[in-house]
Length: 121
Image (cartoon, rainbow, N blue to C red; front, top):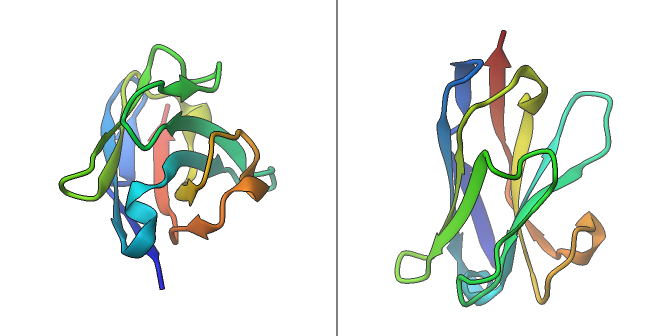
């Protein structure tokens, strides 16, 4: 069974940085990868996507210019570098794997357990 495991979340002050990691095992490591987030009482929302080749990163407008998605296929790991964090970035962040690019959570068949990111003002 394919698995995704996120790490790197935590508590940070506004303006700070965090780097999330998503370690993949099984068949998902070569798939298209994305990060989503979900704040309390809100829908899960798309954050960023990266193709299996590592090219064509795509970002939600709310994080563009502050977050960077990357992947190291040799390590089967996807990263999300988050800079200039804002309190509204507070959420549980999830890694997802799927066969193609999409901003819809329903398009992804494999998910990690999530990692909490809390940004204090």
